[in-house]
Length: 253
Length: 234
Image 1 (cartoon, rainbow over the protein chains, first blue to last red):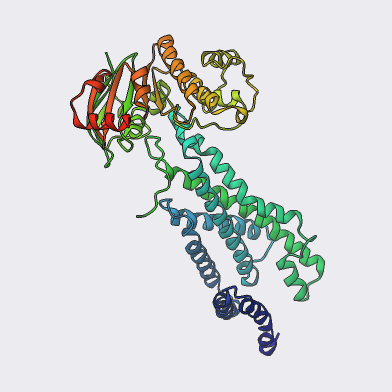
Image 2 (cartoon, each protein chain N blue to C red; image 1 turned 90 degrees about the vertical axis):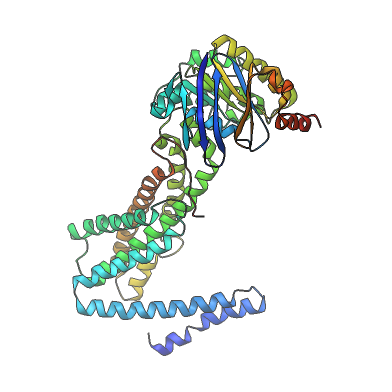
């Protein structure tokens, strides 16, 4: 694709912008900001990736992954407000999920240790981990607020904090994982997944694209389960103290 | 004889230097205006809250030094909204056992239902089909599963109609006699407190204004109590 062709694709921005103006949706500013930001961010990342791919230095690969983890953490911690130490829980979860999944893929030779494969796949792992953590925290905090009486009821009977919060914790894990599982059920029927489409557009054989996509699907399911479970089990003890008392979410004043 | 004793108990800006005791095998009601710290006081007795300063003793032992699981099994608590966990009547009665991976025997579950005048309700009935009054009784029956020495009741009749309120009152008075249990009962209803109390604690703005035999409430010269009674009479 040439820069001229890319410029022409801005027509696709003009349509929603025109609709927003005519219908007075009040979205014009957001559409322009989103467009400018995506252009700048993707161009920067394009140049960085070109540099990393050409340098072929493993240090740059690791730096890229750390950058992704830092950006994802920054995004998630806002949703974790009220849970003390959420930043380190998120960093730990992202690092463990990345190390475990990438370790399996590299260890078993499923993918080679080259930046062209490690960086995009890490992006998918960390990105999915971020979405799942956001979904989980959103739901978990709602559940905790809604179930505080039941939690205190179980504690008042002598139940351990883990037992008291078990229902809220599992419900939040289930709810955060449902979109991933449901999306996988209809995969290929409703829409061709992004990575597979990208590979086919890039000239790969459809079966090769399917095999890569399946790898990513399995990976996404693992990251979904690992992130929700890890964030949940790291976060819930912070809602209780040593005396088995429910201190709840602790928002900064 | 004293079973629970508060010694200069303060908690954040809610309770201020509370000292007093509860007599064993009697019904003591907590009365006082909203925001007096009644529920906070009650939660301290069950160990759901700890004093910022001061001590609470249960049978002479500082509850902060006691095993929380043991303490909470010995001091049962029924909450204002009678929270249920879904499922059946049995699932809810079994909760105090289920949290320790144990099971309440069916015969005992039936006996507990009979104790709270719900003998006709099948154990497998969906809890959602019960009325507020029935749930309140299930909540009371559930606190009896561990055979507690002290029963803490937090406004358990607040959302019930008058007929149900009287029935629950009769039930608690009867259970107190049958089990010889110590009952500590928060109520916003002064008439209810007069009907059921042996002893009374009057709290206002986090301070224990007066406590002792329930008769004091109508004999006190304390202006806070007099104001409260006048407000109730309006």
